[in-house]
Length: 304
Image: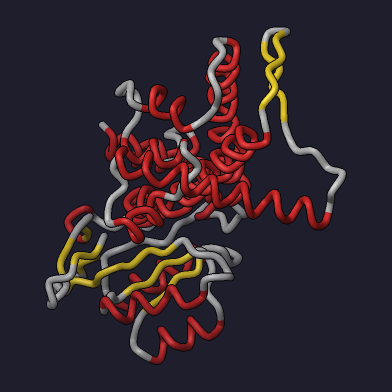
């Protein structure tokens, strides 16, 4: 799930101010998952009212209508698309429908064994209420529904976090450039290193030298991600959070770094510009006021 167009400017502002932006992303994940869940439950309720079982045959009828991609077929069947590809070499619909019955037969056997052993008096099932109608799901149907929701949530969550950095790289770098008044002739959105590896942004100093940037909006639990800068030989590494180990490692190997999550972390970018002799000017005045003018202009420039 990509972050919504409305949320991107808000998250960008929070990143530049060193604020915790993750709640916005989590709220987006929750909203998207809730929309999926409500729609999925409606479809199940209609199917049960029509006398259908929530089984593999129902999935075949439901997901061969052309409304869904082949990736969605695996997710709605409660299966991880990447796992299917790794094991079976493909996640085509015919593969999913072949794998799903075996998967759920095995899962049901294991779950029933655990319940019978540890909780012999428990009976598992669920019901869905919709417009005063109540439909009951069997143990197997409940298992399929719960597993589908879990798989879908994992997909939404993974897509949100992995896509966030990519979608914000260009707006972030353009905002930093404009914030410190770097002339457009002294930066570019794409470039190649001497080893022909693509990087996402680079600045150009007065002598015409290019300085390649790497953006990783990582958190504390992902300190090794700075290694990608060294591997790709970028000159400037911009992150939300950097460990002291990261900073030392980057500095010792001749890389410049900016940790936006620190107090006025964005200001270090001006120091980097001056050191590299990239034309720039300090950011005077209130940061919020500056961002009020710059961020809308950046998104209009990108998406116009």
